[in-house]
Image (tube, rainbow, N blue to C red):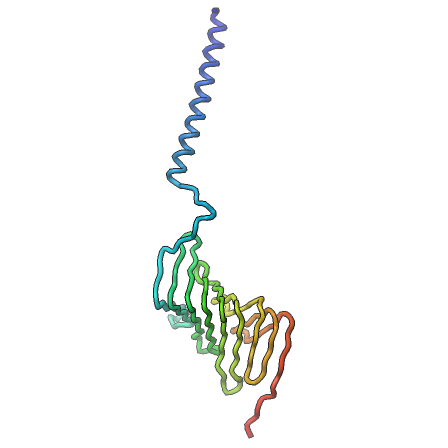
Length: 198
């Protein structure tokens, strides 16, 4: 075997050894990564990492005064989705500059930061009457509440009563700051004239 053939053989063997070393290193890296960060099955449940009974949450304004309160019989927090669920949640606005609104439901789910809460099951929105406005009640089975903007909306059927007047429809947006209520579709109502004091 001459020197040139020997050099070619040595280069080929070296190249094969380098490829085997690279493949082995890649395999070991993948294997180690699986042990360090195991892949989560999409079917695996999102288990709660904390819970509380009889929970009360307050949101304060810049002056430190409470403007919103949320209470529930039970709250569970889920780490993977960073969401919280509630049993029998009750949400109350406390800003004295606006009418007090109370929202209740059988179940609730809040996203990270509690900026959006989804209410399900016998959702009720109540605003007490004042000297100039009769009491108002909204009934539906599902609603999304945006606590920062004080907006509640739904795409489900709703029944709204204001004093002796009744309004039904599908889809609604209630804005407590703007004091507006919008029905999206199939609006039907029975409007009763307000009783005037003699």
